[in-house]
Image (cartoon, rainbow, N blue to C red; front, side):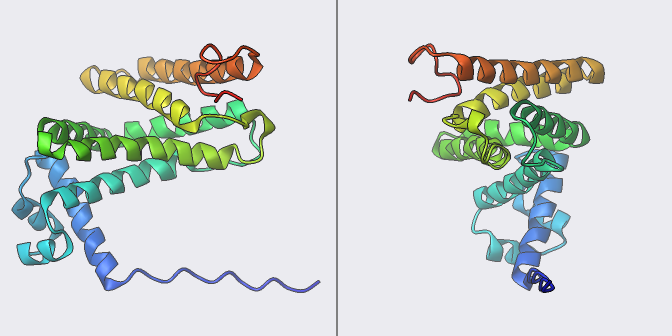
Length: 224
């Protein structure tokens, strides 16, 4: 048998990519410490760079906020799909992703606060309302991408409206996160996560089994 050639190693990040990542991590820390009102000067200080360097890589504060949010969202994406196997069942895939996502939430509560503060900061500034919309679209995209990968090749997932499913999950997760931030109770929160898992599974299962036309049929599944 012919030996398989080793996979090429990914190229190491360039100095520019490393510098941007350092600034973004500084931005995340500055936002954790001071919220969206954190100045670019404080962000530069947290990143260990001067203002000129910061503005060389990020033209304005909104670009920096977007970078910070993308970094936080990447953590969610990696956590949600960690250990997820394509051969898992439809229901177990849903459970796997939501349970993993909640574990990540509990480990990063300070960053969860930052995400809500960023959304409200952008929504309050009418000129930056598109930033708030972009933030949530990226949030939805984490779940649509992870489930697209998990459900690939599953006959029972054919016709699934991943965007509708992602929005349902995010609505539930947002409520659970805000409740937990306001009144932390790990046991109660886990019960809520399990109920969200069951609700998502039940809605998807009911719609798969239903033979009625839209709109009764369509919560997660598109009309044939």
